[in-house]
Image (cartoon, rainbow, N blue to C red; front, side, top):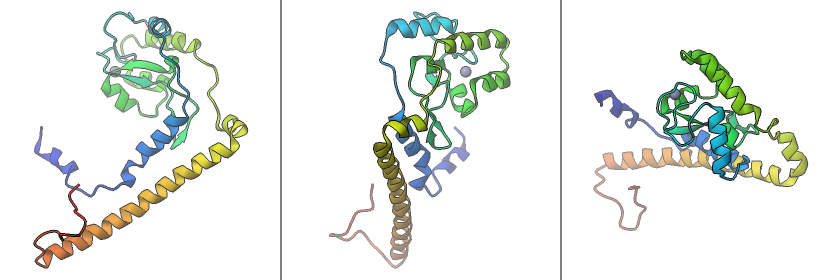
Length: 198
Ligand SMILES: [Zn+2]
């Protein structure tokens, strides 16, 4: 570890910085998912050119897999994309590819990565995806079937973000007043006041 790594702690941390985590949580809650079926997962892995009973490798670069990557992201620009936690949307992945692929389409990521067996990997992905559900759920589908529920759901999401912003503003006031008070010979917390220790 290098000295500079302490820097990430020595800065202001707001609640709104976590907005994408919350957006993801709301989108993930809408995302469809498959029940676990060992046979279906094994068949999907075989299509990717992997041994379902062996140690899995990253579908993009071939290094040891440490996680699963959603081939199609569940969230695009903060909104549910229509793609979910489906067996044919999850591939074994190393952490580096998982973090660096980001929102890039799988084909673009493979092209950028340019592994020596790129063509074979592309063919594997095509075979793997050929058995996937053809069309994602669109927000129009959702709106059509569950108009009132979806509207309320989105209203709650906005409300949560509004409350997070308000809490950030309050935190700024609390921080600033607490430090002013400290400079004026503040010697400890009030016996009946709130504690700032979290
Ligand atoms: Zn990888």
